[in-house]
Every structure is written in C-alpha cells, then in structure tokens.
Image 1 (cartoon, one colour):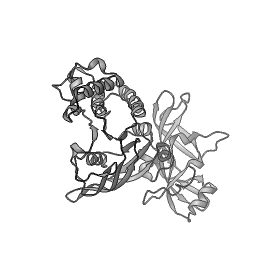
Image 2 (cartoon, rainbow, N blue to C red; image 1 turned 135 degrees about the vertical axis):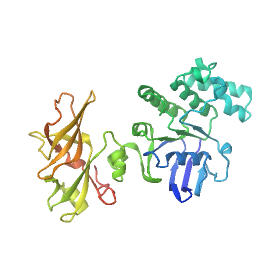
Image 3 (cartoon, helix red, strand yellow; image 1 turned 180 degrees about the vertical axis):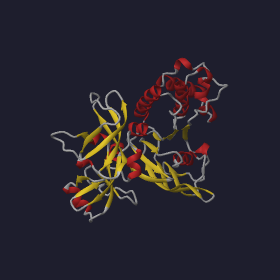
Image 4 (spheres, helix red, strand yellow; image 1 turned 90 degrees about the horizontal axis):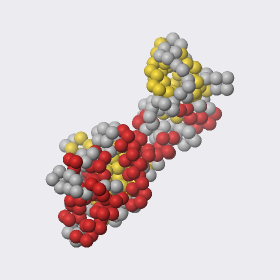
Length: 369
C-alpha cells in the first residue's frame, strides 16, 4: 500500500474544466471518500489516478513515484467500477485470478490468493459459477475480490454499491468497512451517497463544479461546514437555510426576532441591516414549550413518519408576506401533527451557522457549532 498525492491536478476538455486545481494527499492505509453532486468531477479524479484519463496539468504521485507518464497497467492500482466489469464467459475463480495471471503470477500464488480472498468475502462456494448465475451483491463481491487478489498499492472504487438494493447496500457497506480494517489498503471511494461517505470515510473530500469545497473527517464537516453548499449537501434531511437581517440586537427572519448569541455577535461584529443566511439542522429545532421559548411559527406541509422519528416539512409564516422558506423539523414519533397545523418552534441558538448570502462561506466556522 502507498500514499496517493494529487498536486494541482486540472483536467480540461476543450475550454471546459472537469476538475481544477485539485490538491490532496491520502496517507498510506487510509480510506478517503470523494463526494458531491453529479458532474462535480469525482469520477474524473478517480480515472486520472488510475491512468484511464490524463491530467491537463499538475502532478500525481503514488507512493514516492511521479506517475504522470506511467501507463495505467503499470501504476499498481486496482479499480472497481460501478458496473463491476466481470468477464461473463469466465467463472468466479477465473475472474478473481485474471489480474494475477496477466501479471505472470505462478499457479501456487494464484491458488493461495484466490482461496484467501474467497473465504474473506464469503464467496468460496461460488467459485465455479459464472457472473450470470450470481446476484448483484455476489457480483459486487467478486469485483472487489478481483481487486484484492492483486494486492495493489491502492484501491479505487467508483460507486460500487449503487446498483444494489437498499438493504443489500447497507450490509455490503458494513462488510466493506470491515474489509478495509483487515487489509489496511489505501482506498479512494467515489459516491454521491452522503450516508456512504459519512459511514465509510476516514476523511471526506467534498467537491462541486470541479473544485474542492472542504476536506475533513465526517463529523467535523457535518458540524462545521465550510460553506452553504457543503452544509446542504451533507445531512439528510439537509440543513435549513433561513435568510435573515441583523437589526442591532436580533436576527430578523420574516418578522420573527431570533436572538443573536453573544459569542456569535462578538465573532461576526455585524452591522445594522446586514444580511445573512442562518443555517440550522433539523435535529436542532424543537417544538416550543415552557422551557423552550418560541422563535418561529411554521405551517405543516408534509408529514413523513420514519419509525424512530417524524420528519415535518413545513413553511415559515411571515407576519405580512405570507409563506416563504421551507423548514424541516424532526420530532418524536408520538407527536401527532397533520397538514395545515401551525407549530411554534424553538431553535437551539448555539447551533446556528451563519453564511454569507453572496459567497456562501461559513462566517462562524471557528465557533463551536
């Protein structure tokens, strides 16, 4: 296994940059996830590392070796594709051993590696079958096993679970994490699924429009998003974004006064009538009570029972402007609400995140939010 280091990598197609100025280093043995919306450049980065695509500029290192001009077959990385790319005319055993045989491994090594990998992935009983005789989850394991058998310096996984149903995806995700813990191979994983990113990664790289938005461990990014894009992309349901104006004492959200915590006021030093976007996650909003004073009033638009909780999608009521911003709230399963109900809400003020409405940057990222 080896580190993977991208230094100012840019890939252009004609005048369009698919990725631009990408710099990060995956330390040896870590599991990093590239996440972002469709078209943000995730797969382009992975293909560039694999050697299937060529960077327009920048340097790429695998271990201490500069591999800009090294062909894909000599980079010693293994890539698992979204569609698995198994050879349909070969058995599972033949698929697993293909990479080893192409590299001239002797029969004893091939047999030993295949047996070890098959036992590890619980596919030993499938070695004589062909891909068409396997379920989606079994095919996915074979594709992973083919990569593992090679014992490469790094694994590159391009949305390998996206073709699986929800339950199998959850199970396979857990198995993949356990597998990495056993093997300790440097892994770069591409997904648009934020749950996969949060649960698998040692570190997450959030991308948008070909540029890095933030790099960090999952909990830090969730708690302290660098900008509004990251805040709304990571988290399900996403962070609520409420346009506000500072009036000298409070934030005003459509006529609703929201107290500005002292620490936040000292950090922001806001000016009169300055505009902000206030972010707050649904779990940091409660129904108002005697001990939790009311800050906002919303009207219930959609009720989604989720078993352990109820997600309420509501619209914020303004004193004179009717309905505007959507507000997502999570409440206990015993709470009974119906569409059209008006609910008083309390915000956990020390969990407010303040964004610049023009740039989207987090203005209180140094606060303990």
